[in-house]
Length: 154
Image (tube, rainbow, N blue to C red; front, side):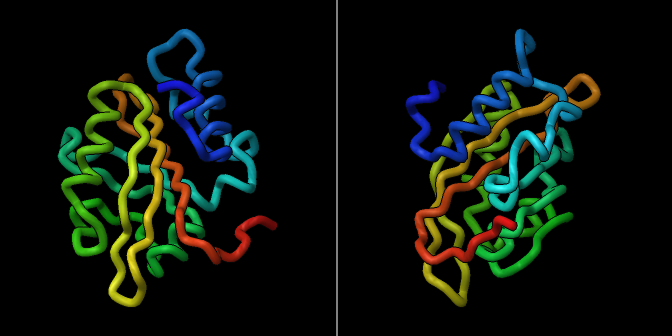
């Protein structure tokens, strides 16, 4: 992935941080995730996930306020399979599994489906991190195509 492929400023900045954090390693350590460096503009659009069952599923450890707003539900603590009805499970699982096995960032697009609203399209940047010698933590940054999100800064 090159920085030029990233249209979102939020994604560009986060990808640059990830590259700096990893240095000459394959992936950075989870302990290197620094909310102060990430910044208040990006934090609401982030989710942190952890691989469970050897990558068979992923648990949302942290869900930013912009994601909660987009979905109209705080799904912190749920797994992707447990969150089955809200988005295309297979597509979401495949993205995290690809980032886990390749140990490389992944940029993809998708839709959140919600019964009370229309589809909300997004771009998702998945950044892998190591914990206990394995790539099992993922920082996912979302950039929504929908207009009219409230400000989540401040």
